Every structure is written in structure tokens, then in C-alpha cells.
Length: 118
Image 1 (cartoon, rainbow, N blue to C red):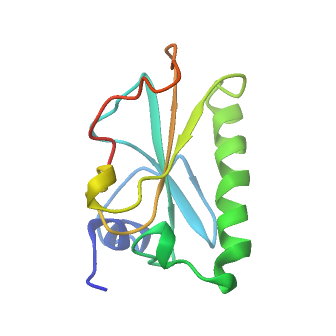
Image 2 (tube, rainbow, N blue to C red):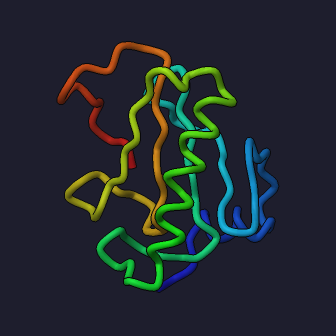
């Protein structure tokens, strides 16, 4: 896998304000938000796509889900948010370093996500 902007962010090579960070992941604001609240949860381990994760990544993937809930609560949107993981170019993934999108702050109807959440 080639290095990505998210790899550089998680290593501190690109100055970025972290909303949350621990030894396994960081959370940043999306620079092209699709909702009033739109943050990215990025694991420090560079996994290109969700389908590239293996059994050894189970604890990390679970941790990312728990962080999503905690950060949503911290941001005041714990009662209603959407969690999105794009997998591959056909889904709109533009950075090939697994990341989760937390979207909230407006009504999110079933099937009503904007295209291009990468």
C-alpha cells in the first residue's frame, strides 16, 4: 500500500486539529462536510479498505465503532448520527486508508446520503 494523506495525519506529519486521539486512532473534521457535523475516524494502522481488514483487526474495528459513539456524544449528536464506511472506488472512497464518517446535524433519511462521501 502506498502512503496516504491520512497516514501522514495520523503520524503528525501534517498539522491537524484532533477532536479525539488515542494510540489506535484519531478523529478529525472532514474538510468537505456533507452534514453540519461530519468527522472522520481514522485508524493509525493503514488498512486500505474494509475488505482488506483481517481477523487480527477485529479489536481495532470494534474500537473504531466505540470511538464513533463517544465522539458523537462529545459533539452533542449522540441521539442521532449516521456512521458510513465506503469501500472501494465504486462506493466513492477517495483516500485508500480505512476511515469512518460520522454525520449528523440534519435529518438523514434512508438512502438520502449525498454522493461523494469518500
